Amino acid sequence: MAYDTSLSSANTEYLNFVAKQIMPLKRRSLEVLRLAPGDTALDVGCGPGIDTLALAREVGPGGQVLGIDASEAAVQQANRAAEQQGCSAWTRHRVGRAEQLPCADASVDAARAERLLQHLSDPAAAIAELRRVLRPGGRVALIDTDYASCSLNTRRPELQRRILEGFGQMFASPSAARRMPGWLDTDGWHDVQLEVHAFGTRSFEVARTALHLEELAAQAARSGTASSEEAQAWLQDLEEQARQRHFFASVTLVLVWAERA
Image 1 (cartoon, helix red, strand yellow):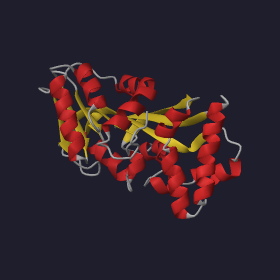
Image 2: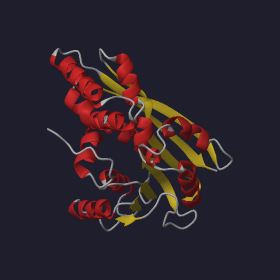
Image 3: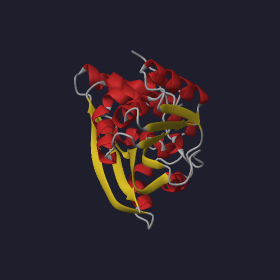
């Protein structure tokens, strides 16, 4: 099945697809937040509410969950999902920016942001906002993709190297995953910890969607790092690897969590 893999947070189909691929990591991000019934939880870059619904189950009707997203369409989808799941009384979604959260100082017990920082031109400002809204002792969990770790089995390694450089042009902060520990290792945070989780697949169809392979090929052709013919030859080689049952793709995702001082 072909998916629209545009990077919009309102692209529910794509986000639901990727969520299935990394569900263990999503669950782990909730575990490290140590949520308790009655807590107030925040999900920044919530998209259509996949994770706010999970947060709602953790904090229960006595708690509060707020999802923030820059997309009005995503927020509307998330609010509909909360109504359908019967948790809208304590689960809300609002349009907002990560760099200017619509939350009072020290009003949140736990916050998370998944695959958000890569899209921001100033991720450190967003992390500063998370610190502002968290109560002392509150916990944050950040997940992002280390695009430099992307690996695919190909007979065109030099061409692939050039094409994969396109991640740096597709995202505002493609190295955010590797920088998250340093951003949190400041006076405002303590007990900074990290885990690296691998995503891997032998399915070309899964990788094509999850790793934006067609977008990478198009980006390479636009930027001149590869010709259109070379970009298509790369995709065709990956498809041929799949037909011969030799296809492999992997990338690592980084989970970092810390406690507000």
